[in-house]
Image: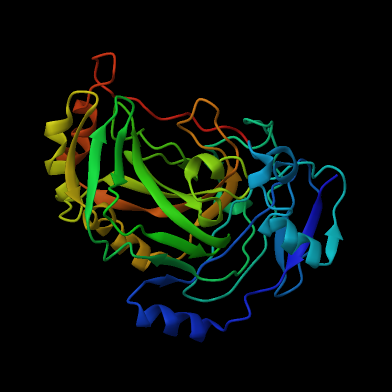
Length: 352
């Protein structure tokens, strides 16, 4: 069986959070946390102000390679141990989390997803991507999701075609952005952003939202600061966080996305790269983040790894970024390591 635990809201008031973020010129997004997907029609009643956290088998199954590097308890385990628990029946043997919160009204409502859970992954847990149904989500208010050093990033980044995807990483002389708040317990350091696309603009994203797919999906990958690097973080249940941004064709040239696109003709061949400004990596997503009413969040796996490590906390922003068909077509001109055009590098969605 699995336990559902209550977790309190942050001790800091919303006003305090906004004030501190304003002082550092960072965007604060009022948003939410977890949702529980059950394997039958079991219902969990949540009182007002109560937030649901689920202790999955991931916390037990995923072990570090080096036992000496492992803390006695993860931050998640410590919070679970401190909080009184509310039991649900044994059908909740695993979980996924999906949610959307309307921050404009600051109201919450609870919807339990009762679809069957078909779980898998590196340790038999949570596959990604998934099909997200807004009507099958539970909404809970959680600490604000905060982006640090994203909008004013200074330094250089490497834009490369590695033969599998278009990928951007920061150079060592660049101050690394980090993410905190929302469903995250601690700071998460930016590692890379990579893209997924298809043969046509109608079918390139990995996540499907209310039956709809779009042209391109960008994954901003972060690792927990406590674990120092991505390789170590991949061994922990709370090691990875991914922010997914969707792009759709239907507008003029997107000037914020233009700096990345203009250099893509230089990357037609696999294993080629060029330098871009660090700021350009994030500038094109800022309008979407600024105007977002919330995001969907669930526990899943990486989608571009042979192991499909299933310890990723996903935050999928449903409002797509608009760009033009000329910008979208540049992705399909990139070549794979085999020399053919890289026109389909997405993983099909997995059932819950």
